[in-house]
Amino acid sequence: MNWDDLKILLALSRFGSTRKAAQQLGISNTTVMRRLDSLEEALSGKLFDRTPDGFKPTALADQMLPIAREVEESLTDTERRVMGMDAELHGTIKLSLPLVPVDRLVTALAEFAGRYPRIELDVSASDEPVDLARREADIAVRAIAKHKRPPKDIVGIKLGPISIGYYVHKQLLSEASRGLRELTYIRNSLNRLALGDLTSPENLDLNSRHLIDGVMPRLMAVKHQLGVAPLPSFITAEEPDVILLPGIPLAHWGYVWLLHHKDLRQSARVRALFKQLSGLEDDWHQDWGSEAET
View 1: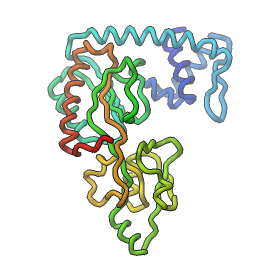
View 2: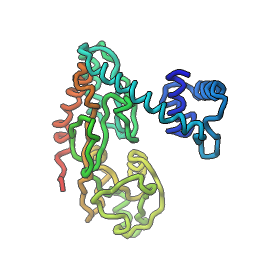
View 3: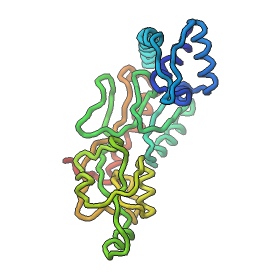
View 4: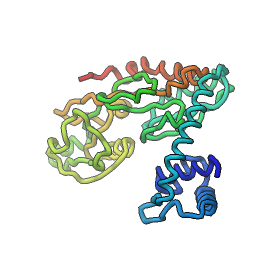
């Protein structure tokens, strides 16, 4: 048994599917299954039950998981500390960005790549939480609600505020006001979107018709006049036909944070990219304006 075997065990226990485990580990589904079969054969026991809901750990896996987690924690802690001691501007930086595209981020990355030709960027995009302690990323950009803070071992700065509001296509609003079309609400899955201090959908007095998850799919739905949807204000700034629903003001939701683990503070390349991206703080306010912080 080696560390690669334990990574398969941990990934399948966390994600419950070979596809997600393979994505996390950067290998193929076939490789995940081959290593799992090999590990189970070496142990002469079954580690997971294959169910319609995914891979479920067996009693044998439950006995091994604490050991695997302890090994993982020790290795990742050592890896972070070693990387944190580097003083060279070369190597790879893993960067996790949100799914919502922000042109300024990409522009800053292009400038950074031109300035540091020996540094390779490994960029992924997700709105799911990222575990910086396990080095799922070296640096992450994430939206965090205003009443929350990053974990204690994470170093972070606020790039800018996020406000959300109910948006609608102005043509749809005009036609609804003249009785030509019905104005409906685009709902999201339960607990998929926290509205913070924004008034609840029930107070809009609109019938719910469509269910659409994801910020960008909801923006596209509003642009194509499918109804009213809650959206962050900064992604509507370049959409002149998408306007706030009258009578419902914006609500301050939280902040965009730039984050890295404290053990990487001495890494020259991480410091360089963090400094580059931290310059977006002024651009955020310049491009989208300082939003009210309630």
